[in-house]
Amino acid sequence: MQILITNIALLVNTRTENSLLRGKSLAELPCIENAFLVIEDGLIKDYGSMQTISNLHFAISNQIDAKGATVLPTWIDSHTHLVFAASRENEFVDKLKGKTYAEIAASGGGILNSAKRIASATEGELYARANERLHELIKLGTGAIEIKSGYGLTLESELKMLRVIKRLKETAPIPVKATFLGAHTYPLEYKENHQGYIDLIINEMLPAIAKENLVDYIDVFCEDGFFSKEETLIICKAGMQYGLKPKIHANQLNLSGGVEAGIELNAISVDHLETMDDATVQALAESNTIGTLLPTAAFFLRMAFQPARQLIDAGCAVALASDFNPGSSPSGNMNLVVAMSCIQMKMLPEEAINAATINAAYAMEVEQQLGSITIGKKANLIFTKPIPSLAYLPYAFGSNLIHKVMINGVFVE
Image (cartoon, rainbow, N blue to C red; front, top):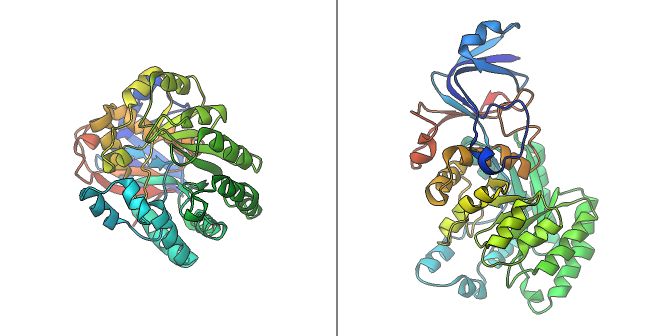
């Protein structure tokens, strides 16, 4: 079925070919004013100015008047922890009362709290909760998502989480990618036996995961007090033997060596990057690895925001993601991520939109399907309410400016 959408005030991110954007090109956002868009069988078939609509040489079976909406490709969220058993607002209150992360973790909180909840939940319960969250995010404009394990920390619980993600892959209307993050922290029983847990990951978890073909990527939390650069390299290389591509939690709290590890591994992305120095920024700029920034995590933890301007000006390839998780970023709202990137990291609206669409698509390897208004890509689209300009999206950060979301050429109810 063909659909003609007319009277689009601004059609955003129109591109004839894919390109990972760096430096000044990140601020280049091609748009068409007063546009039309043709969709066929859930894919973008044609687009252009309303002045040229008479040049269409095929019959249209259905027509939709956009009534002056701005239309964008849906957001791509390339870093989430969507599968979890319960929220952790009690820890949030503890932090407000002055408790440190270390104190909360020592009393059984943090990642270990989520691991305990995962262990007691069934696959069915986890799937139902995650599926509900996923559909909420779709309504907020997310059109593809990556989901990590890492709250299991045992063979049984990690497999449980990854089977839930696989089920989401099979049932969700949007692309879903799965990441194995068994190296998220050390379980209590391995607190003094780090090598024992690394052996468990390499010798038991990875073979079982590969046998069921559960994941696309492998990730490690490379951070002081968690997994060192050397341990990160060992774990990722073991995963790569099973065809898993690395994505690294890097430099959130310290200059941990995570960025350097990611570059050495030719990782798809290194994510977080709150703590960077000039040498690390330059190394990332000279690599093929994407730096994925997670501003809502920095916001929630009251940390310094990622040095987006320095990264962009140095020529790094930068993407944006939500880090949706119950402990440090309990929101998957990519509209807020885009707004916060402009407000707190001084990204231009065009840069933030590109980082959350086409560059983010590269960060989860769906750039051939999504991330721009390009003929042949999926018609996963955001229709805004009438807005005066594109800059109004991050400017009016507290308003819900989404009128409708279209997935595979069908409006989400």
